[in-house]
Image (cartoon, rainbow, N blue to C red):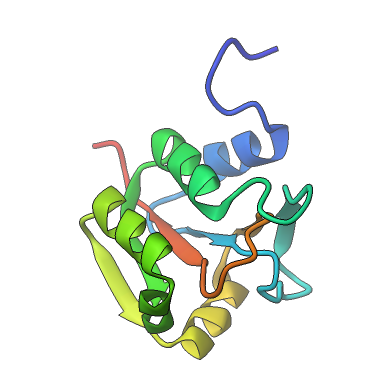
Amino acid sequence: MKRKGMLNSHITKLLADLGHTDTIVVADAGLPVPDDVEKIDLSLKEGVPSFLDVVQVMKGEMVVEKVTLADEVKRNQHVYSEMSSLFEAIEYTSHESLKEQTYKAKAVIRTGEVTPFANCILHAGVIF
C-alpha cells in the first residue's frame, strides 16, 4: 500500500503513464464521456467529491502545463474564481469545443459536482 499521496490506483497509473501534452479531463457529473475514452468515476452522490477537491488533488500529483476551461465557467463564479487562483496558465474555449477535446483525452475523471460548467482539461507538463 502507498504511504501517502494519490490512493486511487486507476488515477495513479494514469498519471505514471502521462507524457508531455497528454490531457486528463476533470468533469462534473453531467459531462458526456466519449465511448473510447477511459472514465474514472469517483462520484458518490451529488457534490461528493466536488470538482474543486479533485482538481486540487490532481494539481498536487501532476505537472500541469496549462488548463483549458469553457468560457461559460465564468457563469459559475465560485469555480471560476477558485480555478483562477489555482492556475496561472488558463486558456478558454467554448463548452462545445471543450466537449470535442475530451475525445483526445487519456481519461475523464467524473466527480459528483452538480454545478454548471465545472469541467477542465489538465495538460501534462514535464518535470525538467
